[in-house]
Length: 298
Image (cartoon, rainbow, N blue to C red; front, side, top):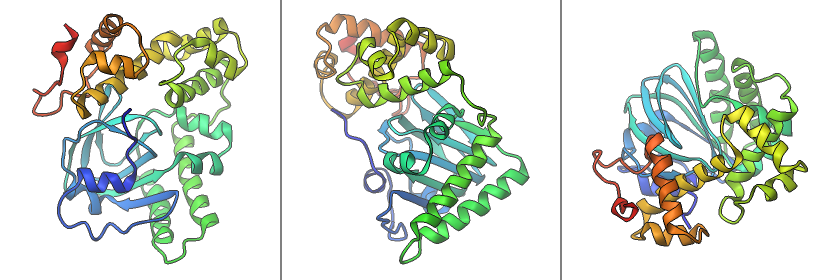
């Protein structure tokens, strides 16, 4: 199975040049200036299985970033957020970009935020454009966060409070600070569970039991929020991960089908082609011509 990429692995695998300025941080929350990162990224990157929650605040410049099947053009001033477990591709970066990149592991998120706040964060659109005033306010918070995390002995309560203030500000700006209704809560919690359990659990019943609802009610909630069935959402997550496996290995689609615990390669191949045809593929990134093992799908 594909391996999640943490911050240090990202530096080793997807950046080049002199990187001594990227100080190793033994912390559940990491922050870097974009000026420390942008000039050294080897883009486009291959698909990356994020082992952290990503937040990028860009104050100058632009970059192109794909999250799952959708590509975003991020033009300053703006915020881009990608949750733990997503698969991302950095397609291009303005080497003179400025701002901050924040990485937060999932355990830290559950420690810092209440469940309702996490659900609000999970509902935020990945891209949020900012006014000059809001851009300034967030820049000040992230500047203080950077300063604290780069001290010899960062004060945990302080840097967690700064991070929480910044994310609550983003929640307010995105108009997701209202209480979610029951259907929205169920749908969001279902999506989180799928990202964490997709490999072993593909049946709706497992997720319905976890959420203490009936399968029919779960499907109604998911359909009302995401405009697709529970089964379709599970299959989309599986196909995204299969694309990553195709890129990182020499395995055939049949091998990956069995690795993802599907017993019927032909069925999975049909699903793969159907979903990839509807979205931006994750693996067509090497000058638009590299799609490994697609012949195995015919």
